[in-house]
Length: 410
Image (cartoon, rainbow, N blue to C red; front, side):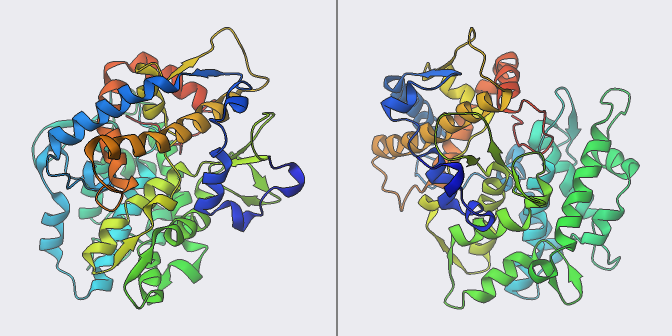
């Protein structure tokens, strides 16, 4: 067990290893007995694994499962919108592709955080209505096509820090096709969040600036250029994302004036003084796997990434009886309840991934964690959509301060 005295430094806490270590011991019997918020039945985990396996076999019978990422949202309705966009724009080099794809992936991932229930977006490709985080992803793509995030009128398909910082509420509301009276405050909150995204990019010229332009996609180019042999270690990408975008995720623990992101400190008996989950950084990182591959770079080391700690997966575990919230006990503070549920969810998911591969007879190189996550996401989202009351109850425990940026949408 770590103590306050040996808490990791800011740089250490942004690594994937710190996130894994923080939750690694929670499922030991002695530690489970100390949980104040939930009870765990490990025997029921096989039922969850079967549900995930069923989704994988249904949609990917050849086991060619893509990573869970924003690109799945952009394929909603069976249309590869990125391919259409890429064909229209064309790319002058692999670095050009990385910049544009990175711009889109990082912005969509950041924007698709808290989404009000009942909001929908009409997709121009299919004329269908999509809600939740997929709807936001399609709205952001549509805004990018129209040049809302570009500082160069001749090149609308880009994301510039200065353009993000200058966004006004009405432009965001128009892009979302949002009725202020029905969803009051959401456009304002999202606009402020996008401003912070632009500021995070603009404040780090060492990471995001190239050719006198501050763009999120330049992070990918920089990483690619530093790996001349064409091999990208995904934990390196994760650490750069978690550190560079930490100012985008305020509200958790900090070191002095340094915002650490999805990192929490609470009165809880398990593990170190600060618990890093880095869920937004994980989602961003997973969404960069494909752009690297498209540009000819190989990505490896997926098992080094932390496991998800979101409300949809917690509800999936609860639905199968793996976890149960102890309703008659109140933790000493709300953050303790959030930490416990998220720690257990993350730890259980790592065990779940191994069981899914076992049942599919698929080694890790065939079905790495990022791809198992796509299967578990497909199993989790319908449960959240069919049980919105249960989802909201768990989401409230896991986000007691209603932090806008936590990606808990279904």
